[in-house]
Length: 536
Image (tube, rainbow, N blue to C red):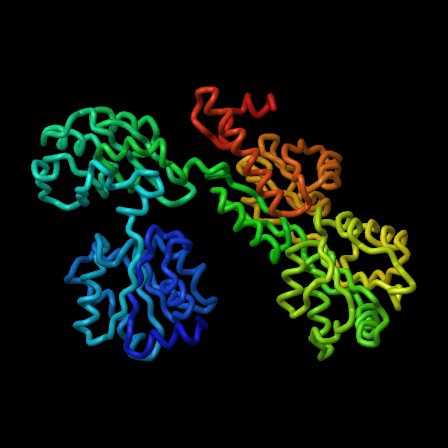
């Protein structure tokens, strides 16, 4: 759905009350994401400001409101007056609340206040923490032996613990973490056995999630030793907790909680970040390379003219940046993909081929093996004067590219016209906090996808700490890292970012299994003791 289409659902006089679930973008409904992207005004709980800012338009107006339950029914109308005024003025308005609007979020009182103000209301559900947090902790709320679930907000007054504790239902307790001793004592007094399993999960559905499993008799002490008594969380009481060892999928991912530095161009980093998130990591993108046009367009213009006039038999694209640079120059000159008619096109890998296809050009040659210049040469045909009317290959690429492809194509009998399509320059240094994190070992791993990213990161931010896991895309990048004094832990078996991320995940899983086999709790490289860091 386009932004205009989403805006049409937020017509004049309407406010959308949207549930944000646990505040993780991936767990929002599709409709919630669309409405946030179309909003002129987002009124949000303070804790959800980063989420609103990341999903809203650059010019969206943000208004912080206290959580609905804090003010109660009496103050709802006064707090919501700016929203009512904006909606009546024809603006697209979203009220973003944590969890689900109608479950322990106070959204019902706000919707009632909006209805009283004669404003049309649209309510979008969210994933409540009562279900999302136990799910991410690997704890089902029902089982073959347990069909009864009770949800209790411990912050509410007048709780009848005799009623809550009777029987053997699964209990989901909100706002119970700071009062674990009192809650556990009340449940035991109400008839629950002291050995009843209990799970305390904080930071649910985020990379900071931590779960402590204990019993009613010991949970307060165990949670205190684990340092999870501060702040909110979800407590699950019942036999279903015993299923966690078999069902814990979120916290057992190979890179769970790892803070991984991704030093790439800004355009390319997001692809790597998505893959890292899938393995449980927390990627942090730090641009080390900026892509700029050539100093003069004359060389590119001659190459484009040669394409149009049939000077080349092949065009070889060795990166997505090359595709983008050529496409932008074509558009500036009023040309499009039709100029490639009759010309064979090669792409160094699947990502580059996909970018070409998005432009309307299907690659004739993509390496069947290693996705690199060497892999491309392995599949490139020899020049045959009988079947190839033209012996020229256009190679648009970076100003600092290696000569591997040029030399190899020459050995196959082709004449190569090597053109600088774009320049790579060192990016500005990252913020001081990031530089300090790199040097002090706050990052668990860093991914290097080229020799230039190694040189540029060290140049603008310094060397990563010895405890940081270094992962590189291939032998050449490894050689550069070692020349600069870095210990390389992971080398991708293939020259692709997907293979590099997978190799880091394999390293993380092997490390995790080794720690478990040693009888220790899994921990990140950044959490290792100083003595262990030095020994590595």
